Length: 85
Image (cartoon, rainbow, N blue to C red):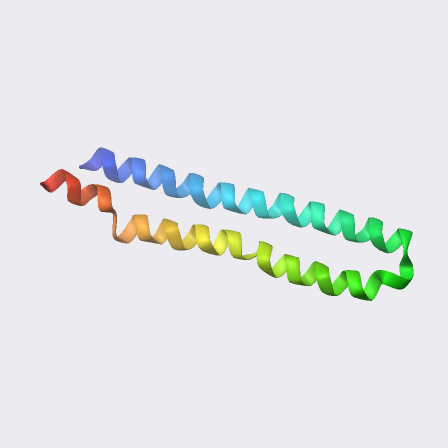
């Protein structure tokens, strides 16, 4: 039982860490491409900025979903129930 709980804690830490890392990389690429696009066509900067913020909001959902899944595994671990039976 302790092994399942400890492996779950490790999996949760990896899940949240990878979600945060992926989001950070995504934001870096998004910001870089926005700056490239604004430098090439400055008149398109307001439209690109709106699209950048929309994508940033969608990109921000990735770690939130990861935290939700992690909380599910922490508080309602389905693997612990299988050990009892």
